[in-house]
Length: 346
Ligand SMILES: NC(=O)c1ccc[n+]([C@@H]2O[C@H](COP(=O)([O-])OP(=O)(O)OC[C@H]3O[C@@H](n4cnc5c(N)ncnc54)[C@H](O)[C@@H]3O)[C@@H](O)[C@H]2O)c1
Ligand SMILES: O=C(O)[C@H]1O[C@H](OP(=O)(O)OP(=O)(O)OC[C@H]2O[C@@H](n3ccc(=O)[nH]c3=O)[C@H](O)[C@@H]2O)[C@H](O)[C@@H](O)[C@@H]1O
Image 1 (tube, rainbow, N blue to C red):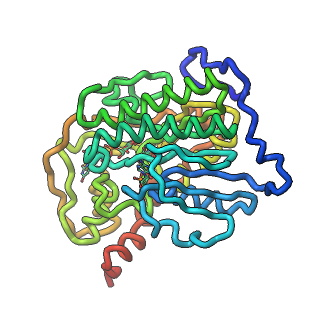
Image 2 (cartoon, rainbow, N blue to C red):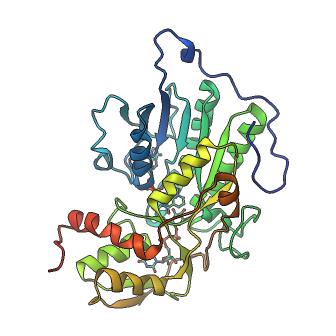
């Protein structure tokens, strides 16, 4: 039985995990591990798929509705015998036979999750219920990519997993923050009530190649603006902080959590903390020293500070990030230049 890594509450399952599908024992069953990645056509999901596909014992099925993801992110795997891509919306039930589920499906950029907030809530609540139902039917282990946004505008700094958060339940970000909080609740209820093997990662701001160019997230905005020679738009006051994790570190953390013995929730993020003004200055220095930095209006309920305490990830998963922000940002440049059609400066 998985160990609890969280708030000192009693999270123990009352039931043993459900037995895996009888198909596992059928004559024609292959010995490979079948892994479902929901949201696998998105930014983090596609990097996770790349890593999972490196292991020849893995078969990977991606289910995605392409709201913020794209087939382009997975083009090198389309047609591969161990890979399958399904256009599917997780708010509808999905019938597949799998051993593990990485449940990532959910728009992550504030612009996109606020675009259709009711759909965002449905994705988090009904989508997670459907994936838990699937996990229960086939006896699969399921990992949810939750978020540092469950801490809201945090009054405790850095944030550790035992902090219950400071979230506005009726704000414009609530469809996402509260949606993920309910998704975490559902995970633990299925774990306690039905013995489902669960893993919860609380991801902190992650960046890297394949982020949507017009995603609205700060790192992709600044890199695209720097390459286009447009002013970097720091939203006021610019003193708000974030801690940025490079995507390969994130994928490594997610796989360790899935493979390990702890349910979580566990923070996965890079504790290096920067103000948005510092981030803009770093992008300017590394990508285009000629661009201006301009101050623009902010959006409601923007958290003022965010930094993970990763003691649990270090102790329980033996994980910590390796890539510093200054080393990670230049790794995005080539991908962004190619997609923007802007050749490197001479
Ligand atoms: N990137 C980050 O900084 C960050 C931070 C915290 C948590 N997370 C979480 O990690 C996960 C992946 O984030 P990302 O940055 O790769 O975002 P992303 O927007 O690039 O990827 C999300 C994917 O989910 C798909 N999707 C959305 N709604 C769906 C639905 N109803 N049915 C099926 N597919 C659907 C999208 O098409 C996309 O491919 C999300 O759950 C997000 O909440 C990300
Ligand atoms: O890590 C997380 O848990 C969450 O982080 C992000 O949410 P947020 O931190 O608000 O991400 P951004 O939209 O990238 O904003 C970060 C900061 O940059 C600022 N910003 C954004 C865009 C911009 O052009 N300029 C700018 O200064 C924002 O005001 C904010 O303070 C993600 O988008 C969520 O999906 C994720 O769950």
